[in-house]
Length: 157
Image 1 (cartoon, rainbow, N blue to C red):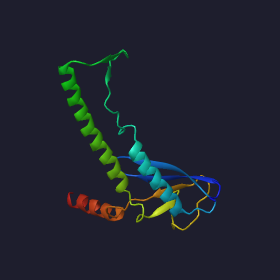
Image 2 (image 1 turned 30 degrees about the vertical axis):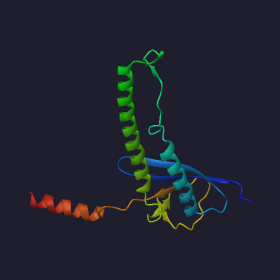
Image 3 (image 1 turned 30 degrees about the horizontal axis):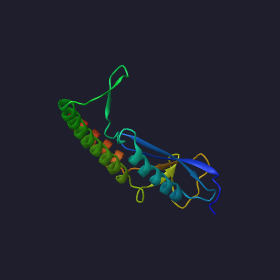
């Protein structure tokens, strides 16, 4: 028997382009690692059911701006619809692949994690309402970048 759901946490990951947030429900003794696994399952499901990526199927009717539907039945309309459907399918496949790639790029198992900006071990047990953050590695040390920038400015004087 599974333990009753007793706490809710938010798992967060951000890139420069987008912030990802997953609300997860956990048992009382669930760890940060358990929360990350639950968030990963949510992320995969979200990528598969994203309304921006969802397959609209091959509609037999066309709806105009006023909301009136008309069935297309001429050969020219059928050819135009086939071309539009092929373009839609290609766009859908590209968007679907991009969503899966974005989820796959999240360092679920390797990144440093924390709660509200404080680094924590994956074995720790979060509290109800905690924001569990997955941290991206820094491209370079910010202090070193600043030192280099100051040196360049001094040389420019």
